[in-house]
Amino acid sequence: MLRRTLGQLAALLIGSVMLSAPVVHAADEAPDALIKRLSADVLDKIKADKTVQAGDMTRVMALVDSQIMPNVNFVRMTAAAVGPSWRQATPDQKKRLQDEFKTLLIRTYSGALSQVSEQTIDVKPLREAAGATEVVVRTEVLGRGAPAQLDYRLEKVGTSWKIYDLNVVGVWLVAAYRTQFAQEINARGIDGLIVSLSERNKSNNASNAKKS
Amino acid sequence: MIALGLVLMFAQGCATGPNANSADPLEPLNRAVFNFNDGLDRTVLRPVATAYDQVTPSPIKTGVRNFFGNISDVWSVVNNLLQFKIQESLETFMRVSVNSTFGFGGLLDIGTEMRLPKNKQDFGQTLGVWGFNAGPYVVLPLFGPSSVRDTVGTVVDGRVDLVNNLNNVPTRNSLAVLRVVDRRAELLDATNFIDEAALDKYSFTRDLYLQRRASSIGKVTAVKEERFDLPAPPAK
Image 1 (spheres, each protein chain N blue to C red):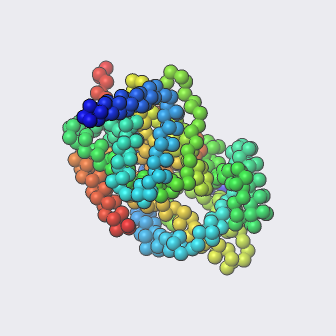
Image 2 (spheres, chains in turn purple, red):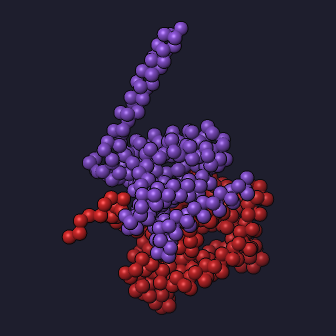
Image 3 (cartoon, each protein chain N blue to C red):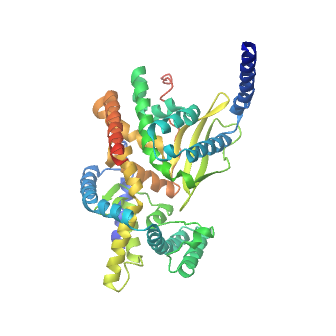
């Protein structure tokens, strides 16, 4: 009995290793292919989950952490928004900046989740040369009304591509936050920025709780 | 016309500067106007637009939006042409023709279903394509974010606007009010987003406006950014 169970377990393990093999191989995929796969996966997951569409933050966070974050260089993204002061920040400050920034972005963009059910993504052909290590992947969100521009900047890290900036209807996210962060840092330093970000997140939390 | 030329010359002169806020030398004045607009918006316009958005049945809202969209498409035909975007101009012309006739004066947007996309262009964008710099950022009372160039554009847009040129004053005013409410309702998602996303609403709104306008006239130049997540390069 025990032997049979162990045998099944071993078969299961081998099976799952073999299943995950194509995922490892997919690391060599082109950046536009990655965006296409990622958009389709995430859209499917959102469409299948009513709680995510309703903006349930724990579910949204879990989805972002499992699906999106492994394909994002969030250190680079946060550092670019923070600017030169990033180099002076302690490891603890860096971690808190990333955490608060991530929460802020997820919270503010999750407002769009309720509209996702009728949307599809059209990935445009890549314009960069074959050997490029930094590329822009252009996409359009098609739904009701006019198509919306949604672009990504990606860098090649080893054999895989990581997102480090995105452009929503003509605005690059990192550039939009650079002035916001610089103003706070100039007035109150890195810790001041962390405090403002966390206050912003708390008040967003409170206003969302009030709405639902 | 001379005044217009002077304003644009002024805009060219102010567009450069060493500090980070070179695009916004009028910041103290702009902030005051921004706060005035924001107060008016919070007490009057946003509540009215929210009520309109919640009370009005969806088909009517869509009809209203399509109707005013069709009117603005007429001016987009001209601006696309002025920017030498011939195909976009023709497409938009077809849109207006189809929507005005088969779409009952623009209430139905049949053009989009016929894959005639909306190519919205105003006169400020045309001036931009012609090579005029945006000039300093300006917050206009009631109208909101703009620039010196786009202020000139807005004045021209207003002059040729079909609603503004109606002879029947009650009809003209009712349509103008309905259009403002419809536009504000359309922007509810965007302003709710800014409320949640910004640390400083004034500068966030400004930066989004300037970036979007620059991108809409294809004037965004990619700059090689320093990687602050990597160690500093050795000083030379």
